[in-house]
Amino acid sequence: MRNRSRKQRALLHSEGGEAGREGRGLLSPNALGRLFALLLIVAAAVSLSCAGAVKQQPIAALMDTCYLFDGISLQKITPVQGRISAAGGITEGNYGVLFFTKEGFYPSVDVFRATERPYETEVRELIRLPYSRRGALAGVVYKAVSGGKIRPRRGIVSLYAGEVIRIDGRDRTYSVMTDAQGVYRIHLPPGEYVVSQRPGPMSDVVIEPGKTTIHSIQRGAMLVD
Image 1 (spheres, rainbow, N blue to C red):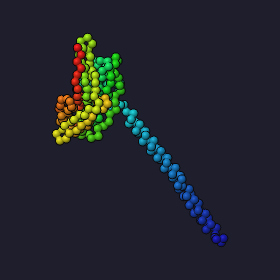
Image 2: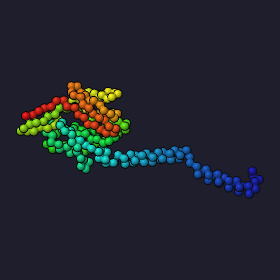
Image 3: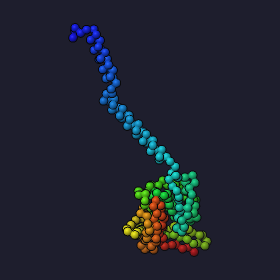
């Protein structure tokens, strides 16, 4: 080794330098781990940013139509700047029902008690129907009030919770129970159905793909002189 020529020693020194430079170009395991963690953080930040962009879309864009049910008639309400004002002539103390609908989405139902001022609320963000070829059926089980010569009254006086709704189709029978506010909702295959609730009459309804059919069931009426 001591007798190597000057040329050999220079060659060895040159090769060692190249190897050192190549070695410095590689990342150590710790550095690779830090780089991988940084990439994960960046990917998560991008994902959250995209999710936030979707969620920040105007809620009003998710709702096509709102209907007000006062126990007698169903009337369409147009949102104003993302809000609904239900001034349908419902007598103070009685109930009204709002149905938020959009084709391809599950309806949302809002029960409110009327006061001296119009009821106001924001439009609702709806959930897409789990099966695109199905439709939705929604309504309430209720008792209405009407009449009154001196002080006219209008609206719903009672809503019935825990009522079982039977829905008979051509090939299958479905059932659904009203919630604490007397509301029921169910998604169904398209077709013709007979809806009944005991005691009460039977009614024919038609379910169309992606659309909401509103059908409320009356349990008597309070007539005021």
